[in-house]
Image (cartoon, rainbow, N blue to C red; front, side):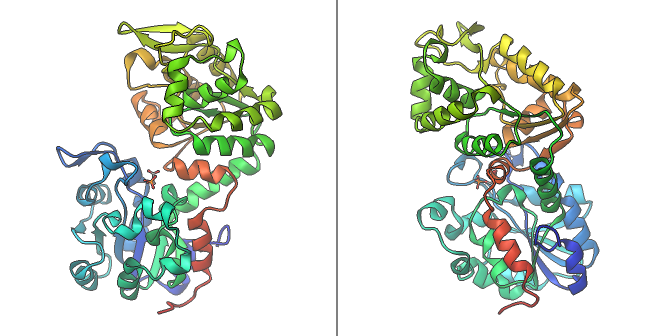
Length: 425
Ligand code: 3PG
């Protein structure tokens, strides 16, 4: 047991051979809907050790996963291509059934033999699992155990394993319901991510620098507050929308990010964060680095401006060269660096400079480097730095929420399920 949660070692005491094990994984990846293929397989590769171990020990393995959501609808898709990718990484067939908890899925589960693996279809095809449902009508974990999904699948399985660290911030039946009725454990990936990230929070080697950027930023501000007030962060280097909101909050001419940026932040629903940013700056200004210049596109070319000189119709889309050079020096002088979010729109040639230079420094610093989140992983791959980063976390939102210090719903549910010795059905 670690962190009050069973690991796969604890399940050995119960024995998994011949048992039906329901394993919730996070293999949510960008998809190419036209071709019916996956654009990335990072998360699929990451859950292989758990699947190999459980099927190798003779479990009848049922995999449950989501793909896309109502907030990320372009990726809302069947998990059929994932079964092919899982099979190829495992070197063993992973069967797929286009059903989640209906009669076809239940029949296929009943026919599983020892060591066989079955992937069910996208669990978010079941409306009770939707994110909207989660936010508008939040069910307690006990209530989640009474949803259709749990009522239909739990009687067919003996044990529940959650290896979906990247979804640990979600409060949904497939993640928090089964632990109410089944003996539960975390998988190897969940265990590793939990260990590495808690280690950084507890005893980071100093200086410990946080590089925060990207475009999905609400949790980033909560997390910044935690790591600055607890003293974990010696320095926060800000880029992307995080940097723009902080600059806006800093006020005056040097904080003038331009009309277009303010309108964009407001449209994205982040204007409220300016108040939070003001509080952070008033308490920790000496440890927060703000962008000193921006990169943007004008007439199809890269242009750079200091804050206060951004033309009204120009949207900053990168940090500028002076800022990038400062951040490089700070990353190279650090002992621990945690990164979430790129410095700008790195997919476009004109606005990739800041992200590229920061990632160059991440690759050659002697510091222990950790990155998390889909965009940061994509940047790492684009610049060929995968082998140079010490730890790549599969979670984006989950990692940030973890770093806010809050107990994540799935962690709470797993602690509950770890105390269950026998199926409660
Ligand atoms: C993620 O991509 O962060 C996880 O798979 C969770 O997805 P969600 O944000 O759509 O719940």
